[in-house]
Image (cartoon, rainbow, N blue to C red; front, side, top):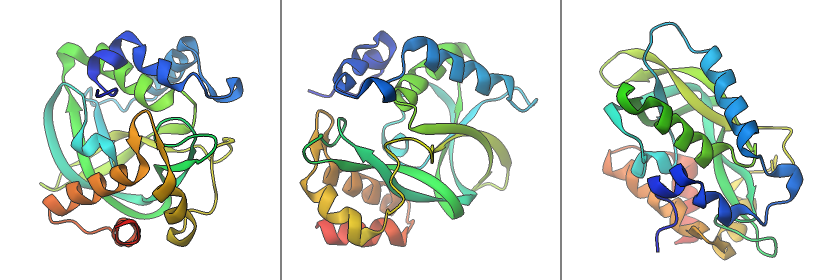
Length: 216
């Protein structure tokens, strides 16, 4: 059964799978809504809201969007720097979750959220990404493949979070990811899905490719 669905996010049942998280890293609804309100208060004045996906949002956005476009995010790079103890890992065999850290650049997919369902879409997105506080959302400029530059919501690694891991090198994380699995599936499946999504667009991320090669 697929656990990550729009209905599961909307209703909150998705969060039930993360109840094993320690209380100090499990956000309640009010804290998530406070985070969302804070982001909207900092929204650039153009009126449109874009979200930049660099991981599973690429192939499974679960958003109502009026437009999607591949683009480049400068100043940030992919990093499997978040210890996963519930989603695609466990306390006994923790995996690694993808985030972005400062430096470099990242190719991904941007989505312009539909105004008619904006509130619901943003809440579903916040449930999906901020239930543990492991991501720090920011506004970042994304250069779309058609040449436009748009401000987009970006979920970056929260460097002070207890689940953040400074060493995200392939040599360190590949053995962990190879053994890790949880209610959302295997950690390896996530990496291979990401590589497949990038390859389908003709994109190459050497970090992802090296990791996928080790796992295969």
